[in-house]
Length: 371
Image (cartoon, rainbow, N blue to C red; front, side, top):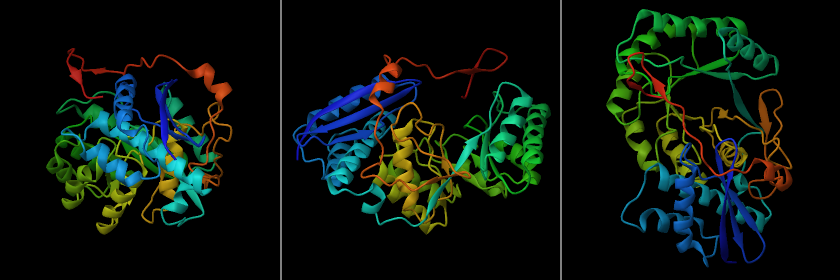
């Protein structure tokens, strides 16, 4: 079997889908994307395609090594995301060729269903409470809410009180049997994250996600040691090397590799195995499309230290067989490969030119805030 063509599709709202074609008619699906940089990643995919065309797609590890290590520059969001989507597609091809789900090729399922969490969102304070109640009533056992607004390096008590009160009200609305994570989104300094974490502790968050940006692992470790709340990070880390120092310094209890950024399915499996040695849980990051979600579900199925899966779509309007959420869980994928099939007719209405800008945050003095 040989790879004949790499086809990229810009898909609304901000996604990039990949089809890897072969001379035996098997087509693998992947999702290589950096949010807001879809056109850049698509260019990287086609540059990598110069190496892949004519290759046997079943040599997944070999191609990963050749793509990652075979050039002078390695790593970073663009190259790793291009590699991630390609790697997903190669696993899809291999699974289809063998007639087996990808997780069966990675050791088999270790659970019967996959826990997912829902996002708590809205335009107003009341919307957040209503959203949390709806999710809990639908059987979700885990939710996540984001930090509100921009945060200065040292901010006012009102900023702390506003965010803590909102979290407390969500906790009161859903009760103690529902886990609630809170995403700081890397917006805070260590000092503000420590202050916020202390105020949030009485309400038992499941985790604080990205309390600080991941560039300074010592700062992350400082925050982790200051609170009893588990720290989660990983969406902006790439390959096993990006997670090494986080684990060695015990800077996070929950790893969040994004399978469209970190290097793909097998690389995330290696990251999870590293985390297992440090008693770290794995909660894959996935605010992306249905192909990325499908890849994540296969990792979740075969990973002992899996905790919970993020999702924003079940694939309705994109897949012929969208995922079904039952009591806050998605059943194990059953089809070969990634177990999904694009709805080409519905997808045709969702294609666009790939132009999407990441929202920006500003402080009240006009300076740039971390988003």
